[in-house]
Image 1 (cartoon, one colour):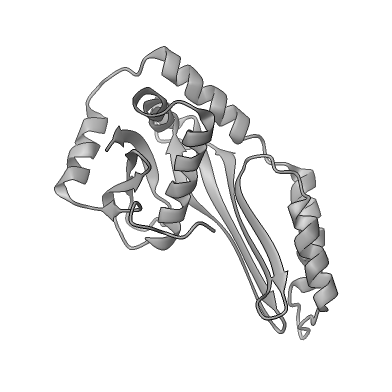
Image 2 (cartoon, rainbow, N blue to C red):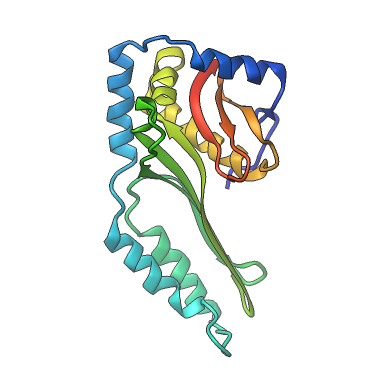
Length: 221
């Protein structure tokens, strides 16, 4: 996983409040940028690949503890799982690291974009993407695995990103990955927030009682 660095900043300062107020003010995003956002969201947030999910389940199953049984996989098996995971289909993938060595065991760290839908009565939130983190560590007998949604990004935010920043797909995806990294390392901010990435910042909020931030817009630095 890309480590957090000085560019990743999450605040709940007055500037963040101002950003949220700016989001509430009506301002139509030019259709050109809405179209670019929709196209990229369809490309990088495809429908969930059930075959891929089934393949991952079968691949990881021998490592998962069961009732009264803790698997003790060999180094050879752990190395083979790392190699096979790297060969899986990469639809929607922003980042993947799958490695094995004898001291650290098997480590898998992946960030994906998946389709999502929120029913907030807000047209901007009818089309959203979810940034999903999957992390696994296996150094027998220790085993840990976690998959979670780390951020929700709305169509409006993606359109603003195209309107106000570099418009290449690669840089937009890089900013999404940095957003996911920041959301993973900072989880205690509630209310309006800003997450600085590249040449700008994602702005949104994390509601009380919810772990996942909702990203509503993007502003240049």
